[in-house]
Image (tube, rainbow, N blue to C red; front, side, top):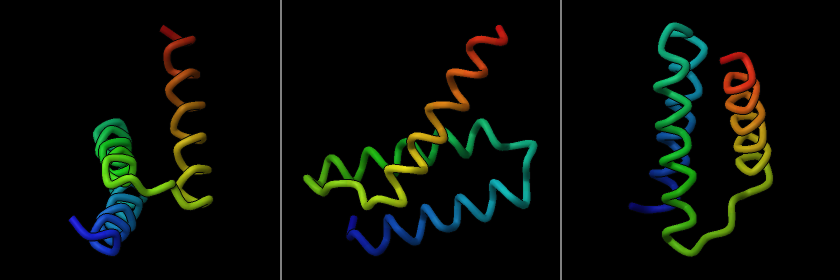
Length: 67
């Protein structure tokens, strides 16, 4: 999949996350998959996506602490 296609899918998932908060866990998992596609292509994550991943990691850690 092309770099631009992955970016477009990530943008779409972020919109979905805002519009359908009840699906946030599912969307977070899909976002992680898209970020891993960047790595699989041998591409470094752009800074904004690396920051997004850090936010997702913090949210996951917070959720795990609550359980």
